[in-house]
Length: 80
Image (cartoon, rainbow, N blue to C red; front, side, top):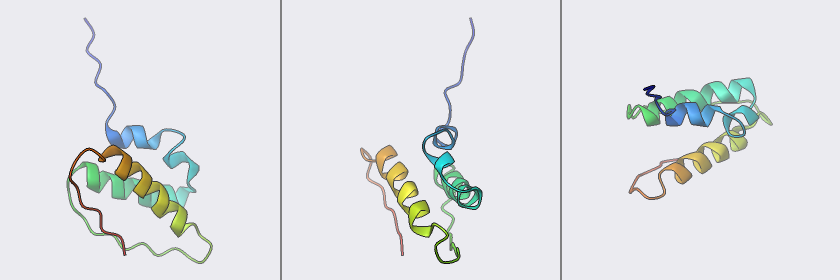
């Protein structure tokens, strides 16, 4: 009997169409943030990307993913 482990939320988020739509530098930031969230590390991130670099797209995709994954649980998300 083979026992297969289900993919972690980080692995699922890394698959298309979610995080792979981001540019490589956005993906690096997104995966670091998701690693902190899914690992319950609670890190604080400050992200600085040049004008027209996709800050809003990165933020929107992360918010969508996290709000969808945790919509049934009482959680806090702080974005400034």
